[in-house]
Length: 242
Image (cartoon, rainbow, N blue to C red; front, top):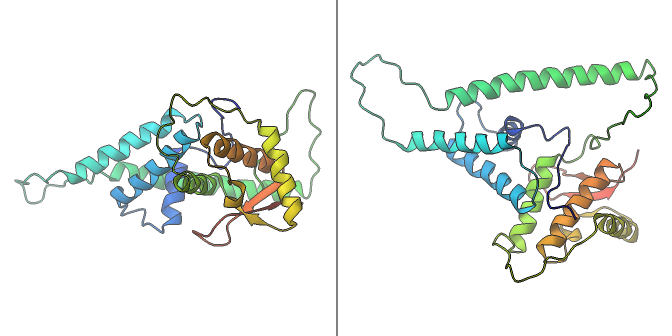
């Protein structure tokens, strides 16, 4: 298993995308962001990604530092304003402006994507050129990468693997292909969707990381999909049906 697994999914676009996900999930007013709460949620995602040894882009860490700076400014006592009408800028304003602008671009991109899908149903796509690779994004309608990270964070919490591993214990290597085969066998055995957490019976951190990566690979290969019926519901895993 590689030391660092690079996640490259369409839904994993950057720190602003993660913040928008949190805002939508917890129904937060984008014009009145509770920095303390959203910082705690954001840091929980970062911590889980570090536990999974995912290759975290520096922009996520920069945003973490920004959130912590805004949080610290809000905790400081407000200085006495000598001029009554003097405007004191909210430390959240720059972040709000960036999020609102990003949301507009994201909505426009989603609209263009819908138009592209409509056009693809009318016009045939030209064949791929020699050496050109076709991407395989996660199936639509399923859980996104942030839902997956939150779920695996709960697994790590349950298994109590958030503490550092002992250096005296030799790391066990678990082939990702092997875990992919085992997951498919389990789905065939039950013949119906199973709980995401049923795929993590082993308590070792290496096993948990290998299983998580195997699920992502199976989703990208359109062999399985994960779904969350409602917000905060448990994830279920099922064989992908085209």
